[in-house]
Length: 193
Image (cartoon, rainbow, N blue to C red; front, side, top):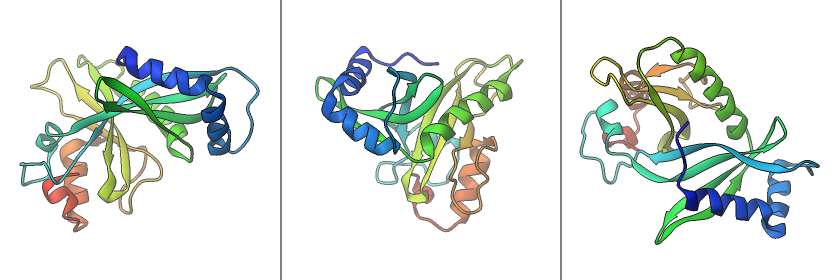
């Protein structure tokens, strides 16, 4: 797992410790929790943005043009995922952005577990990231090879719920998945989001 910047971790811990934001968290999570809330499983969030992309054909090359927008942490109550907490890159560091509920926090944990199984025994070291593709209403766990780059491709595991025509929690070669999204007719991945 990547190490988040200290400022991002401080921002999330302060939000979890704040009575005001914790009320919002309980509302987001749908019910009150009794245990100690902990920020865990930090992942950098990258945005595939059509406005800034120069790669004309959707492919893994477009991933090189993503923008890191912040960090997302899973908020845990014991072994249970309660929500996600997100920070944004701001002047002077990171600031707390929001808590997120719904299906994505649990789907993120499931995808991380799948990634461990998918990469077990591989000589390649992968760095997990989250990839946001808002024009397709998709978030994916992005496994980026950091060693043995010439031999290994980026892998995307779409989180549930996935866009129409994409199977959630099925690991895809990045070129394959980005091409599949492009065939859906969106201009978003024609230049990438």
